Image 1 (cartoon, rainbow, N blue to C red):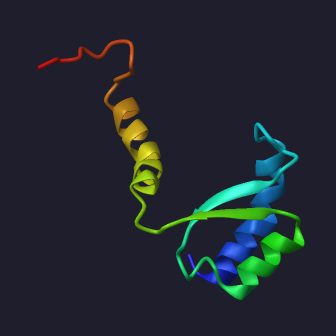
Image 2 (cartoon, rainbow, N blue to C red):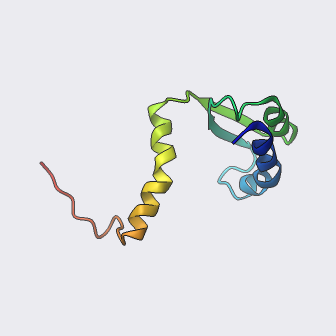
Length: 91
């Protein structure tokens, strides 16, 4: 996603996303350090609507877990797995 597309996404989605968040007052969002998404047009858009960026390193181990979580949950759902019917193996 390049800067102009991200700016469009911000304009179209952030207001609703923050309204539905658990903390709609602070308006802080998390993003990695991807330079395409940190373009001036995107920066000006999110600061213009009163949101604040909390950034972490693009190669942060914590971020990898956050990025893969939705796809892992979707695959588990498609297979019919959930936390209550999984048998765990202990070594």
